[in-house]
Amino acid sequence: MMNRKSLKWLGHASVAALFGLVGMTAQAADYNWTFQTSENAGEPQFEIKKQWAENVKLMSGGKIEIEILPVNAVVKANQTLDAVSSGILQGHLTDPSYFSGRDPAFGMLGNLVGAWGDPLEFLDYMKYNGGEQIYNELVEPYGVHLIGAAATGLEAFVSKKPLRTVEDMKGLKLRAPEGMVYNIFQKAGATPVNLPGSEVYTALEKGVIDAADYTVFSTNYDQGLMSFAKYPNYPGFHSLPMVSVSLNKEIWDGLTPELQAILETSVDAMAYEMVAKLKARDLIAVKKARADSSITIIDMAPEERAKFRNIAKQEWEVWAKKSPMNQKIYDSVVAYLSDRNLM
Image (cartoon, rainbow, N blue to C red; front, side, top):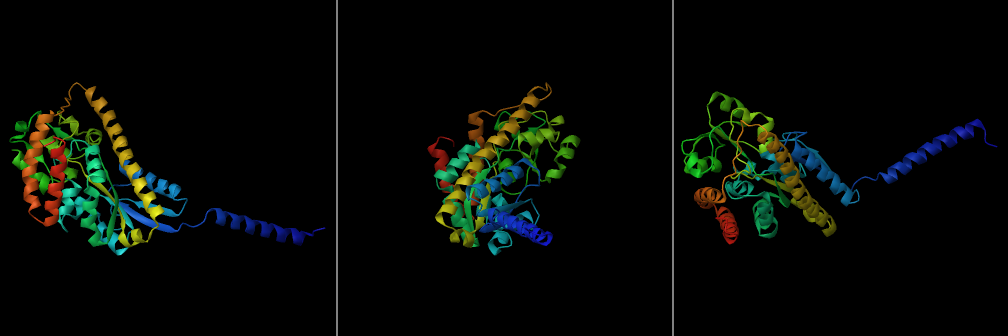
């Protein structure tokens, strides 16, 4: 018969064994990585990226665990390339346009203004028509490897005046960021105004600008921009930012082919999920906007989109001359669009 002391010892031993069993079932991952994004916590894209990390853990059988951090959590948005290269971060999910200061080719592939009429066109180009290979030629010398490309929806356009044709842009006071997009709208006849996104609402309200290149339709609607800009364009026709899902190259090279395939497959799945979920949010906002008789949604005709794309192409040609890589991107994208009668 066991005495009280023996029972007490047995109890401690059982607890120790239980914790040992938990430790075995919750075995530490082989890889623990931190990725920084370009969104604030809680934004739709941020939540999609967090789910991607959970999917990677599940698909890898717990071998890979990824912590997803919001913009500026470790470094500024335009510093993640160096942070991933040096190992401060192991990866990032971000718009390569942030690194245009390092090489203008990041801007060309990150958001080639006017090129894409649908995010699925962009994903098709990147995955199956050479885009991802070109991007890795660009980024791997920095010690970073592109696992795969994703994309947001096409950014919409809010305007106080109807924009049914390219001609309607003439003289339009339009908020646009500096760089390629600013120059393209200028070539189209608009009068671009460089303002931070935080000032778009007030600038529209006070008449400082007539229209804004800002973000996707649902965000424009939720922020109340259509209270002043009653002629939104949907679907958008000008801007489609890439989401580069990238990993430190040394880490990538050290992975087994099975784990590399899991990462590539998971990014492909996330890319299409992101397009679908963001479009669903836009469609809800579009339905609400259409129920408001004071708002007129304009879908620019295909021939007008082609006109804008050909105007944009003039600026692409200017950028193509900046470096051999820019020229390679230009030739590749123009060939893709021309083959599909999109120019």
